[in-house]
Length: 457
Ligand code: ARG
Image (cartoon, rainbow, N blue to C red):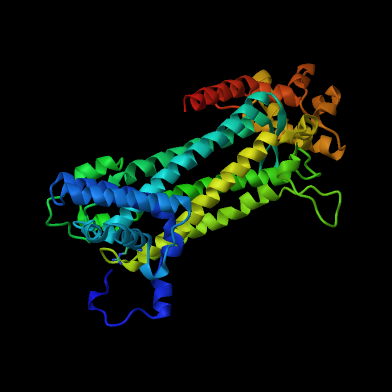
């Protein structure tokens, strides 16, 4: 298609390094959609005759059905999806096919195709994120009052509820979806018609093609239009942050599912056995979600590095934007699906969680708060008294609630029997009523709010 000035064809290695068809063939829908819009515009503006446009459109639809049916053969000699489609069009309709490329270039074409693909994929990822939020919020509502240990430094900190913990991830996914929405909104300008880099002398109507392809408007600078891959970078950045969130939840699930924690049981459907140790139930899906985050981050890094230092406008380096983007988004999509499945099936062991919630003097803060509230002690003094009581209990290897009133009064004479009312884990979580806190009533309210938001879609 570009061989007019060339005496020989490319070296086999040149063909191998140059061709993108092995991976960009997945853009075929977007490519044909873009060409149909471009052809219709060329007809509307009188740049092509209506007859040519009718032939081109009918031919493109034939190519589309053939690819759809799986009977199309992509050829590496034709480099990429754009030339494969156009060449097949030429085989079908002859001369008119050559007019389709009027007023455009592969540079604006590939930017358009890629934007359309990323946009479609972001929409699908957003739906999957919403589905995971739903799975988490439903479990959270059920377990609004189920007590579990809350950790800082992975050390027992204060009791929280399982529902509260799950809703933390619903919030994260809410921000992830915000990033997806932002990326989608910013990318939604049409590069089509920027042509090779400078625009075109043909009287094209870029508003028309933009509208036909669901873009909000055409891009305003032709040089920027063919060099911009910010939309890929933003998408990969958003995907990376979400993959990071999923890997944190995955890590928690891995921990929770150990016999040592014993907080949850994963379903058979999301566990694997060991070929040598019959007792084992391995959380492979969670481990893979944790591990695959690295792949997604790697693709973001690769893309930033590929783009840095590229002079305006298009350079072939940019063909390298595809495989990583496809792989990153496919990986994220699989991780979201696996996580939703695991969360839906996961059975918490409420007894084990509640017992663990009381370990490690998790209600020490409640005791200190009581000293402040009831005895009007300054918090720093209360902290000191509590630390001494924890020291005594720890030496005796018993919980705070097992200390006698006399033992407590030996440290602080003003302590009364009433202190025992705040030392239980249930009491502790119930008291955390500040906005955003873990009190079951709060958690129930937040779960309901999310379920309502998610039902609205
Ligand atoms: N396959 C190319 C890519 O993915 C299409 C654009 C080629 N443009 C060019 N001037 N060679 O980037």
